[in-house]
Image (tube, rainbow, N blue to C red; front, side, top):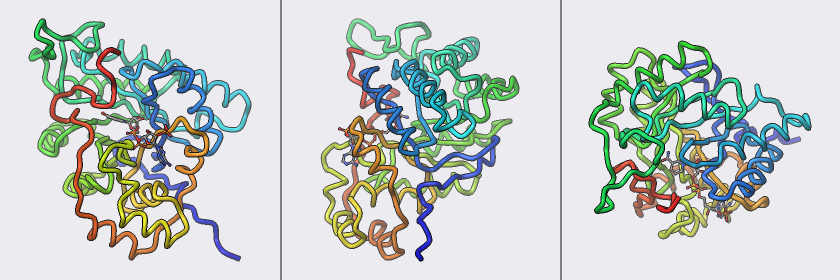
Length: 313
Ligand SMILES: NC(=O)c1ccc[n+]([C@@H]2O[C@H](COP(=O)([O-])OP(=O)(O)OC[C@H]3O[C@@H](n4cnc5c(N)ncnc54)[C@H](OP(=O)(O)O)[C@@H]3O)[C@@H](O)[C@H]2O)c1
């Protein structure tokens, strides 16, 4: 009898925060609320126990509705699901942090959040307009608040008890070092773009040294060109191990010590993305050493402007 492969159930204990984060995560950056609800329900039903949300995605309510329906049906419980959401750029002023956090909790219909992240290190003009622009179409930034001040407000959310851990997203190694050095409560999770075309080994090493979980978004390359899933090295491994290219890329993410986020509105792919299995060591080595293409698909890290969200929204 063969032992079942447990890779998909990997949970990484949080050094800075309570509990553990499931390495296999479902992202909810889905424009349509109905599609969001359907995809979230499917993801919960096939086994995903980690959900990434954001006030900027404008669909937290749909995610909350889906979770409530599945919890009521009894196939999973709130305590088994890791729910993360993010503070948007227009709410960096410390006095805006708790109201934004409470509004997310209300929309998600949860009493506590497992991880609250600062969506990007860039503060935009405070207010209800999520994409403030001047007459020339340029983003209006807010120089009246520092990232450290916003971080201090997140630390107070942990003190208050409705937030189990806090994290950063779209951050460079340089800025991360500053926060880690100064923070009273260190980041538990750092969420950045990462996939075989953008492995971010330096950031991963720093995170591992400091007990921070690196969570990779766009783990499949967001279906953009050059396509990670068409890479010859990935495709050859997929054939060798009788898995799909997506399953190879996602297994690689877990085995190298990161958590990942992937998104799909196609039920068959949602199932596929959960059904990952351990890759042999030579496949891990091939992905690290034989892939030479590099690509960043989302420029958010440079500007704070989200790359995968259309401007008009
Ligand atoms: N912090 C940030 O700034 C930030 C930025 C971007 C994303 N994120 C988070 O990360 C999550 C994941 O990012 P992402 O959407 O870029 O992930 P991704 O999984 O790399 O890309 C999703 C795209 O891949 C396709 N896809 C999914 N599974 C597939 C499969 N098995 N085979 C072939 N194609 C497949 C999907 O198409 P279909 O839907 O048609 O199946 C969709 O077009 C987001 O939902 C969000 O939560 C965070």
